[in-house]
Image (tube, rainbow, N blue to C red):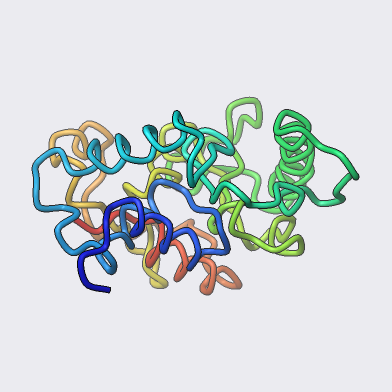
Length: 216
């Protein structure tokens, strides 16, 4: 593993994750193969720049969806619940959204409200996968225990790895998220979210804490 380039390091992270990963997984795991990855202040922009350049030159990687990238030879059929013979990336994204809409219905029936805000107007609640769709098996994709219902702000924070939760319902906040912004949300680090449905979600949450939650 000596002297790997950034491109080789990103490739290794994708290989470790089945050929596909979100930015958060790449950020969390690249140092295993490229120890200097986070030495500069603009380290995340540097990693993105390398990946975008490779895609532009039709090498190594492809963009699957917002914030999700795969190896160039990744079979996108793996992303849909019932693959068709020939699919374009657009068909895949449509198929994923249909699957996610089924998941959302199940989650609303089961959970009914956002555990952080208490909001229960389903028009604005978002079904958040704990283990991302792209990394999940088909049963995991529709498993109601692989999800939370969140208000949009908290869905985004969770999805981007800026917050996570411990198994005793304590709020974990990435160091990269400022105290100022946290206080604007009326939250504090290690705050207990008493309404958070944890039972049955422990393994998914462990995945989220290890791979999605941003450690820096």
